[in-house]
Image (cartoon, rainbow over all chains, first blue to last red; front, side, top):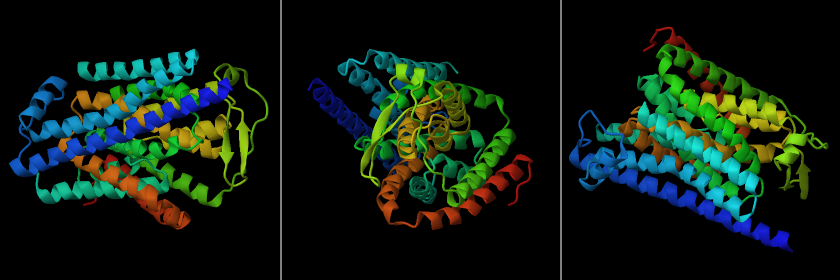
Length: 122
Length: 283
């Protein structure tokens, strides 16, 4: 009986994770499309040659309607989607009391964070 | 950036998404050759664009797979340790390779892909499942079962040779980070041929893993400025639409015919990239 309960819980969490993916991809497309429309309206990226890759300047660029900032943020949301899924899976395994996999999934998440750190340094 | 170029990039994405999802290739195998051969884009930028295409394709596809019972989440998570480390190293090392080298690697990869497709058409391998437990797999709780629609019964499977599978996954991740591909073929090989997981769960699990592997190198490319948003974003928009469309029309298509048509295309693109590596531009 307890097993049945656990399985439905895992199902619920998995459906939740599927929902995260959908929303992530949907938002990424919307934000990138805004960027494309801005690009056509302004006829330029808003930055010239040097498009920033740091999130701070990019968020500032979103607010001031720079096309490339919207394009970059849309791409960033798309990259974030699988990453958020890994993060959500940590809690899925926690709910299932599968502590070995809480550890394994946390390790994968740390590797992804480390990759972001390397990109920022490089 | 003209309107016509923008529309061209979106269309490349749509086509890559449709063909990628139908042929079981990540979008990367299609996007990189087009950008390098037809647009003369330096291969480093093409690789970065392709890895985003891979995320777009796999995120769209795995929503469908999650509702299926095929996916083995534990196998995916455990092996992602190795694919993400591999991808990270690949994305860091891409900078030390000359473009010519990368063109040659990619060309060889395409030629191999053509050969693998040819094998798929002419080879009917029976699925033989292992019946014995493996110590490491038991410790990691990797064994599972899936519902086989053809036989209408639940099939239990036992995962074997975990260390070797993990090693191949590291290689798959490395290739993914270095060349901007999903490495789906290598992943399926590691699970299906080495770890003795049945083909259907292997494919579903490989697809699920692809996005996470790609994210590891994509985040490096994003922050170190190799991503060209003007090229990447339109292709990504196109590929998301294309792969959604592709997975809808897939059941109604003669896959074998498509593969047969696609093999010469892949081979020609591969050979062209190898020729380009030697500094000869054909046009």
